[in-house]
Image (cartoon, rainbow, N blue to C red; front, side, top):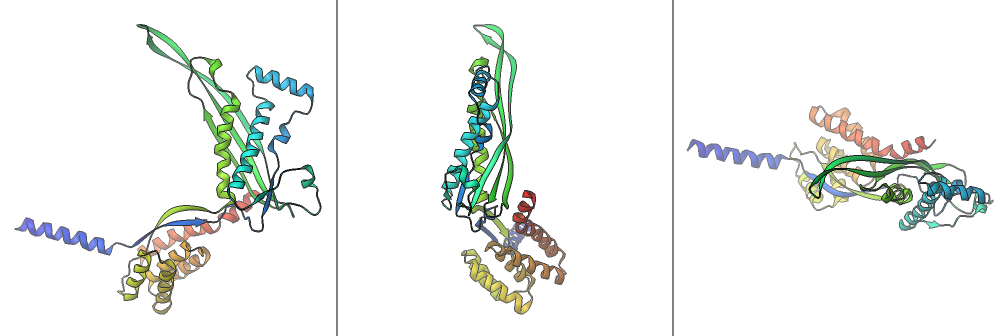
Length: 323
């Protein structure tokens, strides 16, 4: 009988704990572009390959010779830069927010400027590493030492988005990616440098999506459980559970403004952040932090403020980095 009572107590405790758990919001959050692209409608990609283009017949012949010998010189950079340029154009067009204006030399010197922004960049590193290792394998019943070869290409690209009218850098980034080949018994069977660098270039350029266009992520937010038993808090939670965030925010804000309920204030701040007003959310949390004596809630507020401040300062941090 005592054992049965113990089980009942455990079940009841679990139910109480589940009821007392804080409501959570799992939602898709839309983030603004990392670059400040306001006012930008047309973009020109300045060909990255311009700085690597052979400038004479003699230089072209030398490049061909070095390529034939398996060396990595300007020909590899030229070809990789060509691919980078075409990929940047493709990703900007795919954002479906801007018109890509084909590059001409006149665009850099035209007055007035005929395009809103330029994307320009360079390959800051293109390193090729050929490695070998050996293993013992049985072939035709005989243990044989077999050598395998692999090739890796490390590509590093620096690029900037510059506003044309005043040459302000809207965004600047440096990315690298290392692409490694499968192993092969024959060194001559290793893939060409350009084959591996093209794969690396694709990975690098793909990161521009978040720079120039809004992007989404799925995030989970934990709200604060009401301790004052205000019936309106249940109403607000119902709005949350039905993803009616605007109505939930209005209700939480009204409760906080009229009663000072700390849970309502905290939840209102979370919803402000979710609906895009991060700066106001931080202000609400700052006020709440100064007025609450609940140490657990204070810790939650501090963590949320740190996250929100990082989010609010992200664009300014990137602009400072660009300088």
